[in-house]
Image (cartoon, rainbow over all chains, first blue to last red; front, side, top):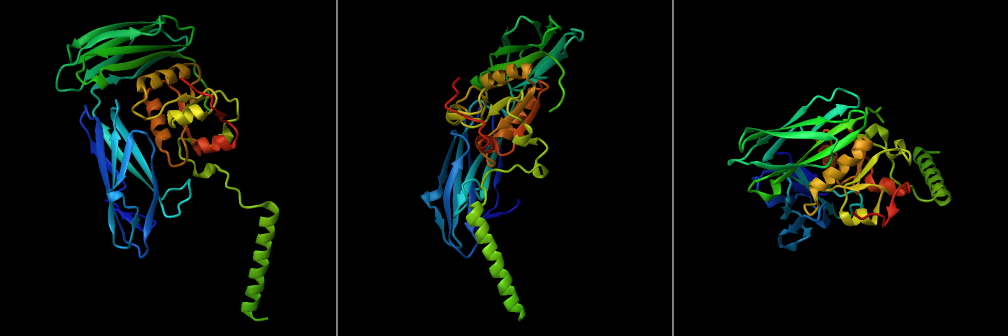
Length: 214
Length: 153
């Protein structure tokens, strides 16, 4: 693990990776550091980049004499995220300018994706043949998860839910009805997932007009 | 004249010139400058996006910051768990359907959230061109491209 030095403070790690369960609510990470310089170092301020982060410094101590060690603890509310999420705490030492903190502490949280949607979006180019396309819905959980309803925001697409293996795998077959007009359909999938935060999913269908790059 | 005297004279002249420049032109500019040479592959400089360009602006700052001062017409999408992520996702998808060019901005260079949001927008696979604004809100603000107290959902 690479040692990171910032204004006299040495951190054995400024990135912590955590593999959390699907139902995770909070994640806590600790960053140890020590002052290996010959001058005192002061933590001037620390700024979580999200209201979902609570940061504590051990014993509330902000000034560290040479040789002293400390600990920054960050607790994150993970909300309804899944996949990989980075949570960052910026730390200003001594006289860091407002726009240049000495270091950023990152917690990378990996949360299993319980309902896997492949692909997330089906797309048709304007005026192309309206061939049906399939979104595969695969459950990645120890127990069966059923799709119990599909609602669509647009009449420009028709859809059909096919059960491949009850509680395990489904297919949403989407067909555009108008290939002359760009359009977007949002399909909301309601499941009986016991984890509330994974219960509702959404996928997209779009008929798009090709564009040139910026 | 000895070498050290010559050196001293040169130093005094240089300092005098520097002082004169400071007095005439003022302190060095602290305005954000976007150097295209240092851009990461997914970043853009604001200078390359003239006002009025048809893009979807996505604000990755806090709701309070967005409501207080965001780009007119921008959408909010951050990683705060109190926000309705599927709603943010859907709002961006609707706008991308009409304008498949997205630029995400955050508070400053240290934020990092704009890149995560840009990744999430790419993962929607809606075919949009997605970039992160170098300099974030600071660059926009200094260019007069933000509006005060303009947004509510």
